[in-house]
Length: 390
Image 1 (cartoon, rainbow, N blue to C red):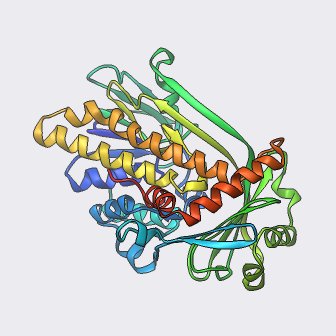
Image 2 (image 1 turned 180 degrees about the vertical axis):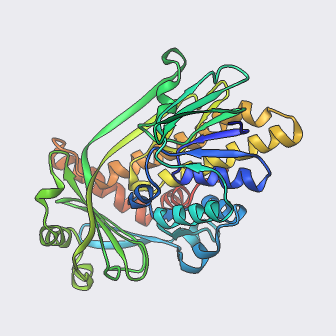
Image 3 (image 1 turned 135 degrees about the horizontal axis):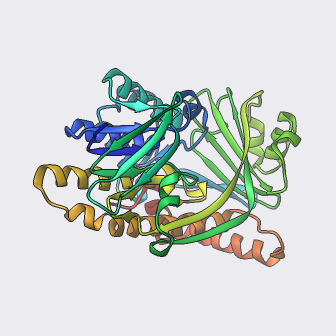
């Protein structure tokens, strides 16, 4: 089998890249080790920046997003028992974010690929990438007991943190930076109306909490828990009770509880790989970087990678120029590190860290008080939250 770009991974990064390349007339095939239903079952991000919105439109799959997505111009920070709104729209000259679940975004991209009958192989087993340091990269896989080989010009590694692409890069050519946080997020998804029309980020003596949403009728809530906790130990009632203890009186009064659709515990880490290019193989999305979910940057950074990578491939084929490919890693990493910094800072500001004592809480309260009462500090927060420019 022969194609121009072989994409490993059918998450939002791989699917979005495939759609953009197809629109530009560039042949591509996507390989995914799981089923499509499994990919859709993964509950992930729900906040997308303008860069991601624009790319969905460019890919021709943004119609449902604009119909159903919820535009947000601010967030609430809750500390000391009181909420304070950060007016992102007003502080950034009119920029917003949109609530649109990653599951829905992925579904839109899957539907488009299926309708256009573009090649995608689910349950591709034992995927391996090779010869990406030559002019003839290859990807091999097994399907239904048969071995297959794809010859291609380039490989796009969009296969996530545990994928084969980053793992196949020569150890002597790669450097990895990582910070693992000593807590996780216990998340609950429910068919209940959100407690507030915008997100509430809570810093409480009992730990962090987040009130988020997926629609006007579906809510997503999180509470900080130790890494030793197991989701099976948390009943729905226990979750709701703990969440209430971390909210202000008004939010507690308005909170509508109900049975969980999904419940899970996600560990938090900051992770970056340098570089993101190895010969003719390029890493994008979680294959190259992970951010704590506090700043809502994971999916949006993946979209930025895809923007740079798709533009570089289009430039290569249309203009016979490799300038975009040669600067891909540098351009992505410049933005990645700024987003990593923001997510690290926001995580440190809103969570309780074991063993740090009361003085750490006082430092957080002082910084939060400064943040919400200083226009300059609020502007820095708003600019980073809505997404820095490309």
